[in-house]
Image (cartoon, helix red, strand yellow):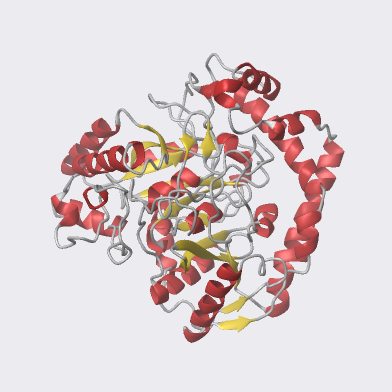
Amino acid sequence: MRLDGITAGRRGVLVGAAAAAAAPWFVPEAQARPGELGIAELAERMAAGLISAESLTRYYLDRIDKLDRRGPGLRAVIEVNPDALREARRLDGERRSRGVRGPLHGLPVLIKDLFDTADRMHTTAGSYALEGARPRVDSTVAARLRAAGAVLLGKTNLSEWAGGMSLTHHAGWSARGGQTRNPYKLDRSPNESSSGSAVAAAADLCVAAIGTETNGSIVDPAAANSVVGVKPTVGLVGRGGMIQGVPSQDSVGPIARSVRDAAVLLGALVGVDSRDPATAGSRFHTDYTRFLDPNGLRGARIGVPREVYFGYSNHADEITERAIETLRRAGAVVVDPADIPTARQLEDIETSIVVQAFEVKRAFDSYLSSTPGDHPRSLAELIAFNRDHRGRELRYVQQDGLEAVQQLDFSESEYRAALATNHRLSRAEGIDAVLRRHRLDALVMPTGAPPGKIDLINGDSYLGSSSLPAALAGYPAITVPAGFAFGLPVGITFMGTAWSEPVLLRLAYAFEQHTHARRSPTYRPGDVGL
């Protein structure tokens, strides 16, 4: 499909369905260069009357049909909104009669299948168990996107129950959505539970997408799919009406093709949420684009925590070393090494198990018992449902993760002590300690290794990542594309203290402007080699 307002003056730039029409859905690397239009460019074209919300929504629905449902079969979108075109037409009418609400007016956004929407879409966490559930009200995230004028295009696939179902790594697989595939090489993992959101953003199936993170579930798939992922401070974005797992760690954040687009989307999501006590002390800004500065690395002090977060992937290390040199050339003061004092302790502490088991059981019971519909009302009933429907639910992925949580039983005092230990080791004695010791603005490290192969039988391989300190602390992290190893994406993470999103966005944006490392997907088919 050709959309005049988008493709005018950009022939050959967007990797559209037509460009990938010939089998085996492979786009030569020379043709797969950046160029998908961002929020500001689309808004300009809408203001000029070159495109409308309706035509843009049709364009993305067409791409979802050709690239996600058919063609390479990315399976990033679990469900499209049957009312998306109607919403787009309504927003077009509002633009003509009342003007625009803001930069997202009329722009189609996909959200992870963990957010309630009071419409004709489902909210299922990828499970058949919730297929008939009908939430009464929008989640805070859905409501804020609608208020900003975004078109809710649909919901993205994920690792079922946000990766909490199995102890084995099956990134991007859910019973309801199937297996999400990496658009850079179709037999490679999309990485972690927000995989559908990351793949959808990378393949230009939407303007941008929303993901969630407990530990790595935004930054890891964003890096594996060469897009930007923002994991905010816990409490910056309200989680009312969201299927949560570990509330002390769960964050909601944007996944987009550029830092600027991620910043725009973040500004629409933040604020105090009456349904989420964690937001009561939120330090938020409504416009994060004002912190973006192409010279933002000049004079910044950035530390390199080598212990634990380097050494598991030669390819990721090599790309990160080049990124560190870029930081220096751009004027940053790089402190190397600047290790997190508790890095090894964080990898091994058993208190994480206590916190996760205690919170997951209660979060699942709370959501299931309060959501209308004929479905399991508790974690115990969900486990029984999966056993009764093992042909659909347990074909590849077992539910040993859910069963372990159900069997473990910790007291309130044990949980409180474990949570305090997690926070102490990751905050005051961890991230904050190294930042304070070296007077740093942020830390930088590889986000993860190049994505490994999908293995539904044995589980995907997993070499390592850098997400754990920020996850346990509830602190922010941003991943930005840094390069490719044999055509497979690698990102770097900027990590900081609580509420340091403005600093991290400034650093990530400046790095992005110095490197322009992102390339569009090539949809390479799978084979026995690379």
